Image (cartoon, rainbow, N blue to C red; front, side):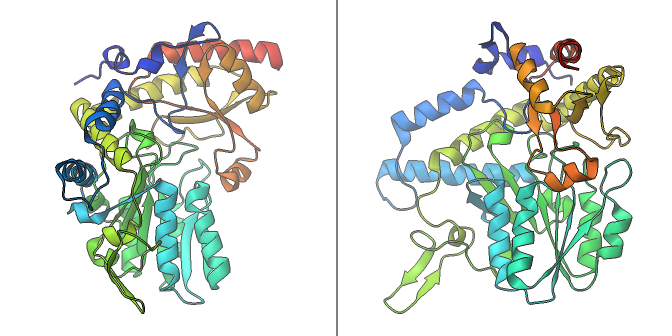
Length: 407
């Protein structure tokens, strides 16, 4: 079934805004997505009718809030194919989810153990491992890229050893939109006895995700990149692994019993959720998932691929655009990094803003990847379910003007 973007756009109030007197063209969805009316209405309803702390009170309001909070956990678990809601830990974001794993594994890894990641990772899935390796005497191995800037599976296999204890890779690159072969990566890693963490920040709101099919041990993702609120994220972890890990934070809610001499921990996932959680964030995330499921993740994926094909076809016809060779693989989502020859990305983005166009300019929290590309920064246009071909045409027209004015 074709996705009706024009109808969907009516669900997002911000898209009717004017920027510098022009219609808003929002193409920065890899950074964060806009929120549908259903989320805004749910937030108002929650604070007006249902707000209370969770897991603590026995009064009706608290029980209602707890039911919605834990109901959201179940929605999120079902959305990514987890076996149980107890495999979903609420965090502030995908970054905290990755750091939770790094902190917990630090207590189990020993000097000389190895971690394997890729040069194309977002800093959130690179810096925690770099830091852990330095602080714990571990070895950080880094997978190179292919000539088309894709994950190099051959180099990955050559660097995977019995000393590799964790493989940490993205599901989708936030720079190139490349979809990593995560199922194959997980299969090879498990053969070597390594755990697998997948950073799903750029995939969860754009395509169907099944953590059982991927067979990853951990999957980190966040609400704000899939129509939900900021400040809400999650870590999926296999139940048998979570039970063996020590909690990241300690304090209220995550304990089972405390004396003046010792403390014991609650069961997973609650032993990892110290203190009052982002209650409304989780509930709104559940609402966002309901919204996406009504549209259908396969429909969203198909729509984005069609827009990507259209956008790349237009951009390739502009002689002054450099796509950095990241068009060789068809295994991509709708993230496009490019530069306007002779124009700094920040200057180009500033001028595009005059035309109401929002794109990201910078290193996209992926400086090692930028060095591989041989540039300090790029422009990045990232699409989602409400974007249209007309908006791509507006971008192409504006890029021609930017080139004429600044190059």
